[in-house]
Length: 107
Image (cartoon, rainbow, N blue to C red; front, top):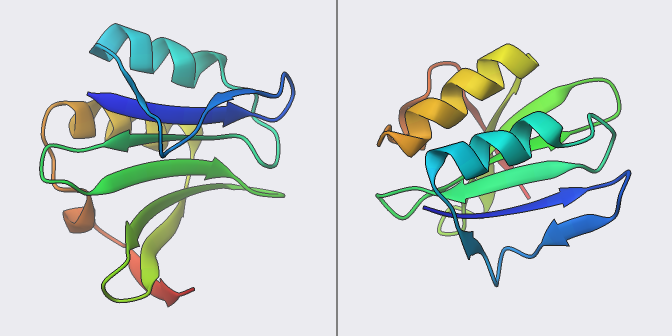
């Protein structure tokens, strides 16, 4: 599975337009070691072509499913444990847009 990330503490990252391939263990390790600071994020390219991203905001963690055709994203705040569970589900083939509780926000 292809993934990308940015760690705001170390300034280490991989851009979404040049994602790297990783196995489940690689992706989960990157997620677990990502600094929980504003601006850090990790995203995966799912089997159905959607992107599932997790972004640290000022006071919370956001799950984000971009929808370029609609000009916005499906989003909701989550805990780190919820994000970890969703990431594992995405690696195993979940359709990100079917995650319960997502709301659409225009860009």
